[in-house]
Image 1 (tube, rainbow, N blue to C red):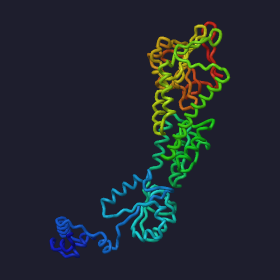
Image 2 (image 1 turned 45 degrees about the vertical axis):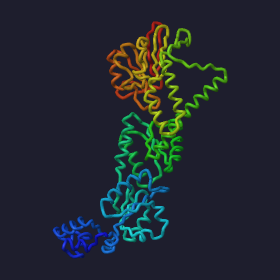
Image 3 (image 1 turned 90 degrees about the horizontal axis):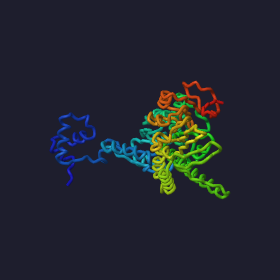
Length: 461
């Protein structure tokens, strides 16, 4: 038989009224008396009846958490974590928690009154009329991830400006100067905060944002994917995209991968067209050599057959990837080593040698050191810090070096480290752009002339 309040009263030596107050209004009972009551209850394994307590105190100790998001469920990827945190806190107290979506809550008339809640936590895009309805029933309201203009309500908010700042600062520090934003049509508060923060940070860092690089889409992966495809199909496309949340990011990533695979398909179609017109398509690899014109030969130093086969296998795996997550992993792995697959050409014009290493970083020259001597050398890997080493420069021994910025303008012509290294070796440096701190005239092209005696002269035009 379960113990009753009378059993606790007899064991503690106080009245049933005092026992009741010790549980319902403990601040009204002296500490020594309250201790006696709690000790007796623990011995008897007595727990007060929640319903009876509620009736006596005229309180229900019930709160509700409603997810205010279109087509959401209580398993929503964002609000499930918040819900778990609320559950953990209510489990530490005497409160009961009701969980629902706002749409499901509205389906039953007078739901709040019938369930007799004392407070409600509204997560997401809660509307002012819903808040007013709860307030008219004397129900306390707390907003999560939202703020409603004109309503003085307690709100739990993320640091939107701080979060956006970290993302955009990271992109700028990686060299991106053409950054786009795709914003989802979520709650007006969240959308406006992130949009304004994006514009503020880019303006503070002196990064121009063109109107065509700011796009809105519905809060769905399909809509985000289509919007990202349109953005990335522009003639002057951005080099980085700030997606306003995880759903938009997933759609943008899917669009980028689809576009990458389509470019591979376009290449295959081009090959088929050329082949159909009788053109010869050659797969060049290390060791191939050809005469381009009288006195000018081209020798392929890399990649070798092993690198070509490895790249072909990676591309094949991309085509066969069963899902987006696998595609993302393979893309990342391939991108991390793409520099080592670049074509490395050595041009020889009547004894004057020109080394064109494509996007190769210093690792891509492995095993080729004895063949690298050149009079004119274009820095690989956009002149980044790993484009050349002191040992590599000893093998090449160039008289002139060309520092080329990337076509997407992510980087300036060269990192200070390789520039300093080139100048220490007495190499004359030329630039495709006009990097800060260099006395380079504005130009649209850089032309080199090789004289009969092998002298190399460069002219900015």
